[in-house]
Image (tube, rainbow, N blue to C red; front, top):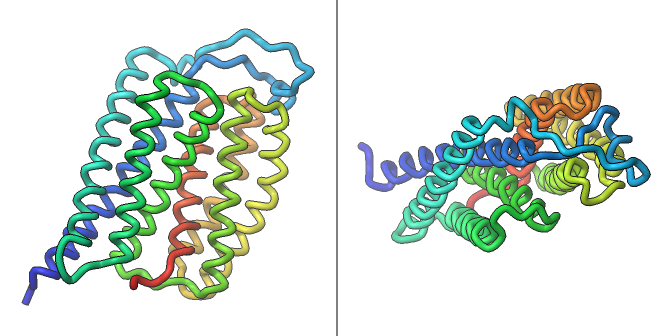
Length: 276
């Protein structure tokens, strides 16, 4: 017999997976809009971003920056971000409003709500700003929301938790992937000339950690997470090579951004504790 609690759990699971998909759309659209902005041409990345190079003329990527395309991407970004906020509010209410309360899921929903509101305020008070703080706030906030959405969805789906040691390594890996994303964004923005070198060096550390976490996850029975993480790590190196070899072509960089978002989500999923 299906109870009210069962029906509520089914609805919560659907909302959580919807939040994951919506946040993937939001982070992809945000990366698209960032990469579509005019930026100095680059023909030998990362050397073209060094401080001793003269600044080249700014160019708008023809494929990503077409006016009609940008209007569609902006509209998609706004609609998806609004839906995420509504979904998160619904999840928070369903998990915490009445018994049986799901405290762990409720805490994740509240964290997502705080992040969503913070990003909304950031967008309102800094419209069109290209300052490094605004750039990193939007980027890391969106990535963290995607990761927490994945953690929420897998928790409600009843996926088994990792061992304490694997959880610690997964959290370290998540921190490394976020740092990688930050250096990558700064590499293209020109705010810090050393960012491209830091991005490449940290890639070796983050990649090694990801491979270790992925193999350990597979050994502990987390085959989906482990295999996905191993595949994404290899794909990220391939996309990085393609982007560097194509003078940081925005299309390759966009795919590289999406891979980073998915990898971070997997790391945060493996780093979760059991529901309590």
